[in-house]
Image (cartoon, rainbow, N blue to C red; front, side, top):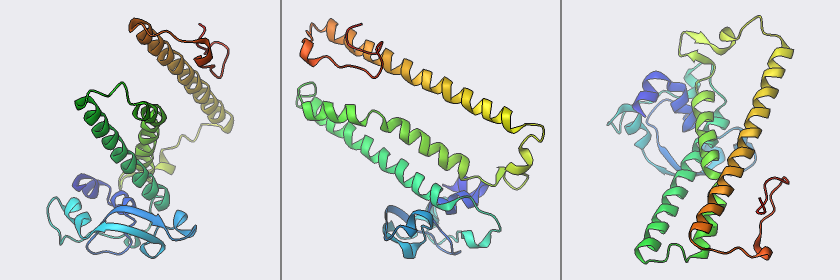
Length: 223
């Protein structure tokens, strides 16, 4: 918290939707009162569960009464709503992961880890959430520093190559999309193969009725 406040104060303020200079609270939970809060997460638009002045404590490195500069003091700010909600989403997923880990630890202690169908299904359902937490964390990191590439020195608009054409940018974007789709499909295929090999090593026999059919012909349980 202190490092972010010292080096990128607008990002810290955006993470907590802190508009007015003064002591800052830490919002543990935030819920929109209306659709307006999704684009303008000011205090009057939110239901929050907050820790008073803990934001000041984090920003200063130990002082609950420290003054935190609000977003209204800056001429240019990052997209506050996107940073604010991405941070909430990322932290919420973090607590979900902790809860799943504690649940798994309890089941392990009771010797029922591999027998709890509910837990195993929950872990499968939660498997994409790690990627979601990673992405929202990057949203906070990269969008939260806007409009700067180097805080106070170089803006994003100044760092963009003036020789790059729209066609070149589009082709680059398409190339990245194709590459990452291929990586995702490959990762799913390898993950399924690893699971099947582990089941075989444990002597688990798969019935034809329980075979899972993947989204592509080569991602099936028959290969």
